[in-house]
Image 1: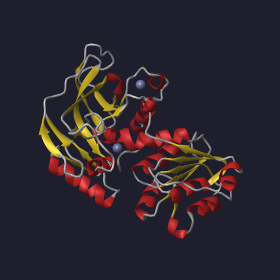
Image 2: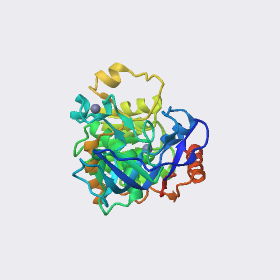
Image 3: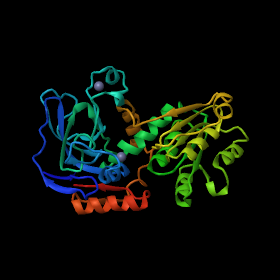
Image 4: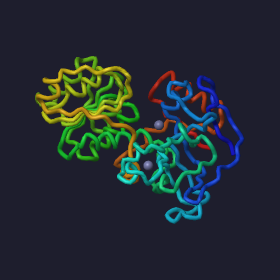
Length: 342
Ligand SMILES: [Zn+2]
Ligand SMILES: [Zn+2]
């Protein structure tokens, strides 16, 4: 089979001819029909985020059709349309058993620590493959497995309840999903903060109130728009101390700020005014969980989560096309969503 792999960080990905992976007794072999190219893949290729062992087939946003099942597989049969949960775990440790499998010591992310979906086939444990409803195309299904899933997890970490208000800071793929999912979870009002007019306009199309940082401190603007109260939940999706602090300062009393953007710099806060006094919570959120995905797929099936704006183009499984898509992501950072269709 063909597979596009990272051989050396800082170098373009390379097309390999490899044997089709063998599915173990608990695994399914999936014929890849769509694999999303994510901003994380840019970091992997550049060596910003280490990938091992090398060479590695990248690709963690995968949808396809079950080709073959192992002897112990009961739930899935060949021909089933599936999407893949990208974290492959042991399935039996205290974290896996408790539904917090992202802390499994044996956890391996597809396309990062174990071969991913930039290939014609991929083998994964049966529990990592979820049925993709017929209403959801493979391309949209693949991208659900990363940004949308992470947005849903963040909203769940923030314990957003019906009738509450939400601020989303940073409207990329994650933010656009968060706006729609926030409304699906019952947010009364959603405020969307982004410096780019096109992104604010897109968020507004999904019912959010746009907030332009050029018009003044977004936290002050949100406070004004909420009659001085602030929001119940804020999501920070950018990864800057400045926007993290804005997320905290946008909160109403007993509000929850969820930090999702990656950042390696310290965050300074006014502990009394911003945290203790209002009994605010600052919450970290990372990735997402297998048991959150059925709800997400149901939102996509029923159109509550609209995927029509997510995928901007498709490319074939060729090293040159995939590298060009990564170059584009590296240059423009957002607004481009390319999916490989082998
Ligand atoms: Zn991704
Ligand atoms: Zn485990």
